[in-house]
Length: 207
Image (tube, rainbow, N blue to C red; front, side, top):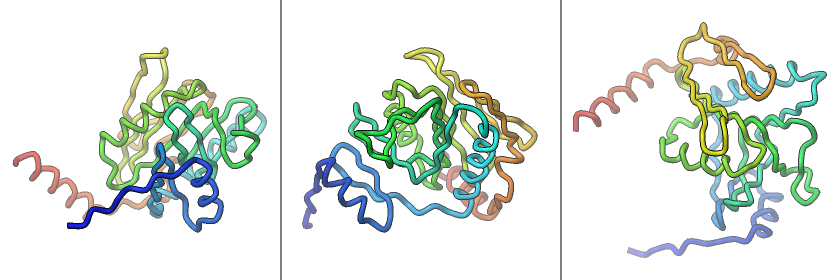
């Protein structure tokens, strides 16, 4: 079997390729990883959240960015594109680039269908290296479920889970609330697909 040697890129090579690319890719310590395309549900949830945030902060000193704004994590040498970010005050751009920021306060991500728990943990740990980062939401796109992390101190975070449509999310670090009904507005769940995933999960547990 022929083994394909892994190619590593410099930051400069990645940025040059990204400027010309038709689709976005992440950069993780030398590796370029193409990002999966978003689904209808993914797009709708990110749009619902960012729209509500933007309206709420219309006359306040917060700025909302959606998934076209790149984030640089220098301690992990990662470039990535969170679905939604909130900046308190003025954005800090990397080396005067207007497409890359370094100081998000809140990060919101809509989870791809096949996101594994260890991948979530790794990304969260990377975000924790950002001094300004204080709040994190992980939103499932195929069922009503949100994990809400808020920073207590440098080594401790609180976590809250939401899984009912009549609940409301209140952010801790910025003045904002959203109901789950508004968050999942116009999102359509595939009940057949959910049942199939649950069946596979149950079969795996039995094995």
